[in-house]
Amino acid sequence: MSPRPRKVSDDDVFAATYRTMVRLGPGELTLAEIAAEAGVTAGALVQRFGSKRELLLALSAGAASSAGDLIRGLRATARSPLAAVRAYVDCMAQLAASPAALARNLAYLQIDLADPDFRKHLLVQSRATRRGLEELLGEARAKGEIVRSTDVVRLARSVETMLSGTMLTWAVYRDGSAKQWMRDDLEAVLAPYLARRRSGSGKSA
Figure 1 (spheres, one colour):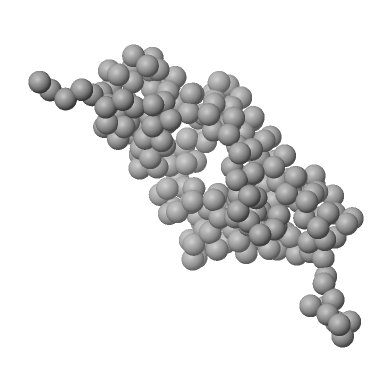
Figure 2 (figure 1 turned 180 degrees about the vertical axis):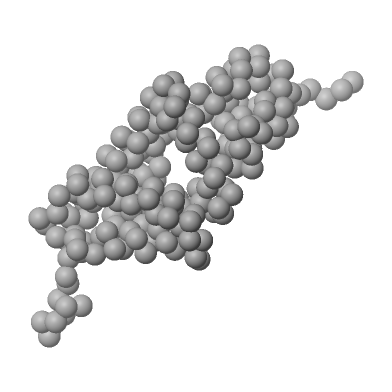
């Protein structure tokens, strides 16, 4: 008797889809490639999701619904709210692990922007991420990491905008890693808002 096929959950399929997207651009991505990564048949994916488009939409919806969980998870393990912001930037840097990886991610982003069904999930994800950054910066203000006069809504928008711009700029210059570029630019954005801690001598720490 042949062994029974391994049961694969939707989350397993989504994880396999993401891993395949990391390797392949939109034009190369097929249900067969995803199925091979997930350890199932392409027919099983069609039966479960209907089509590659529907599978990708389901993946997009899941990313949108869990966007807030990502930032809350980073905060749970970070020593401070600003450390969590820095950890989020490091996570975003994974999208630009190499120029080719960033090019693939931008190709998928083009679909998200052009297709209304994908864009609605992107918008939900972006709003949740912005709220998460606002909450982290608000906590940082309350804890004295940044000055009390900081407009955290405006600063969160600046951080979000910086991340996208820095990845594109790094892709042009390719000097060092995108992660370091993004870290450096984050510190430049945060610098005017950082609270100046004073030592016993009265000088800035």
